[in-house]
Length: 145
Image (cartoon, rainbow, N blue to C red; front, side, top):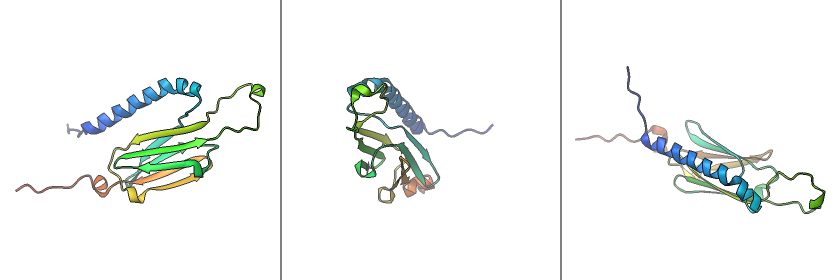
């Protein structure tokens, strides 16, 4: 029986992401009631060369979205403006969120910040973040003498 390698830091990142999601889901209704912030749903996955983030942003113009990156953190900010051409008392239901949003994601690898690309199509923002060379190779071997 072969031993399986485990990365304890990856487990910690997974736990951190789960805890963040629990807090976000718990506080989402409270925050939505305030009406000042909303949290667009996001998918994050990886390929061999990059980490890809897709955010659902219907009704948000590309000009009102900001993407910032640090060593292993990606921040997404923006705003969906409320249409003022209606009377609130005529609505039977209003479930879409408006206002500003701010999301921050810890990425599992060091990334190449200079190679980040973003595109916006059909209300979906796609951000492609290249992994740093060391993350693709899987680390650097050091010769012990």
